[in-house]
Length: 82
Image (cartoon, rainbow, N blue to C red):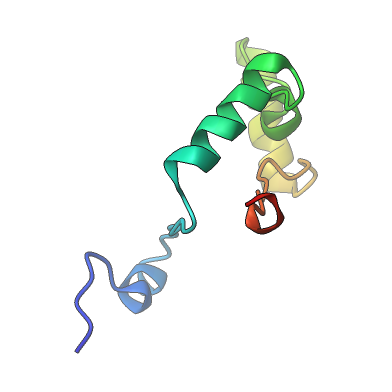
């Protein structure tokens, strides 16, 4: 009975992934962006080192395939900041 734009079961069967974000508010987004602008929340801590050369890109792909790449995702828990 629930209508949504995506069916997680069908996505999983096709070996696809997706993320659904919740808790976004204008204030939270603006606060996060200000922390990033001020240097208190540097983006490179989330994303890691960029791969710019062909050798770096291939090394990154190998690290992903080998399972040796450090996580490149983060969770922002805004609940206590309200």
